[in-house]
Length: 250
Image (tube, rainbow, N blue to C red; front, side):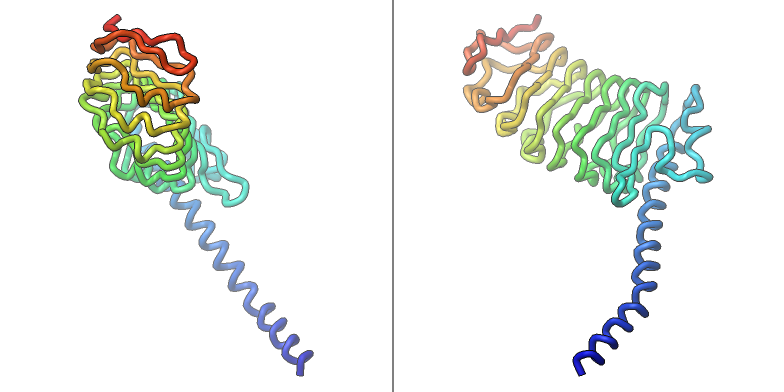
């Protein structure tokens, strides 16, 4: 009976295997199509592409993994990185960007993107690297990225206060660059809970406040702190092995 049972089980596996393969292939294709649709939506929101980077390269005639600026993972064949830096692009970001669920790196720096980021942007929970610097973005600063290590929004038009709870959603953050915007808040206390921070750059905003709190000493990995060009007041303070930081409007 044992041999008969094993034979029947083996036969059932052979019969069912094609169904599993077909199911996996359909799912993989569906996921790739989701990524492709998201990128085509982004392409449609580009109003100027003088070098024709996307116009001539992002075509359904070729695999999305072969498109310029796109990197796919070898395991799942999903889009894991998008680098459109310095392509002279002008446009806005569509809500479909939030469907790139495997995306770990997004680099749009040095273009002319503008507008606010869609709410769906925070669906990208796998992101480790975001560089949107040297554009014209405004609105709420994106947050709620549990794996994010690098965030640069340098030289945009972000204004107003920084959310007090923003950094509770960025526990892995190592580099934070928000310089050359129009931020006008004090430094949020939640920032000092990001124990892995190595670089903090708030330079040339409209930020204000008094002397840095002693909690900044908790950032033992901190190497660079830029606060110049704001409206801070107070004297320099010694922080661990640092010499001192002078808080001034210079």
